[in-house]
Length: 126
Image (cartoon, rainbow, N blue to C red; front, side, top):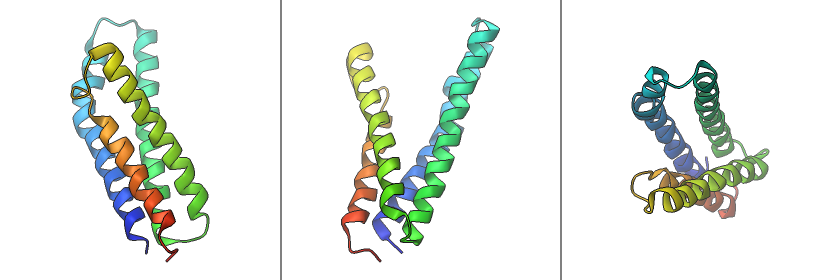
């Protein structure tokens, strides 16, 4: 069992829970109750649920990588790259649109998860 990757898995699962239980009521539900067009609501829902399914898949893949050494490096590499990209997006849009990073703190998780997972790759493969 790779403990750093397991910790990244736990943080990814926590991020998924925050997205689902916190973000849904804060962002998705109000958008669905807004005056957005039906098409805009459909696009918003697709994007929202795409993030949800991606978080689920990434969490499961990290769990697999924590337990099994087979395919560990490419799985962790791809998931880390994706989460780093998401983190960069939160930083860029937080700074450019909001002028600060505290309103959208998701960047913290999206930088910590790859840091833990990549540390697990550097660790002796166990």
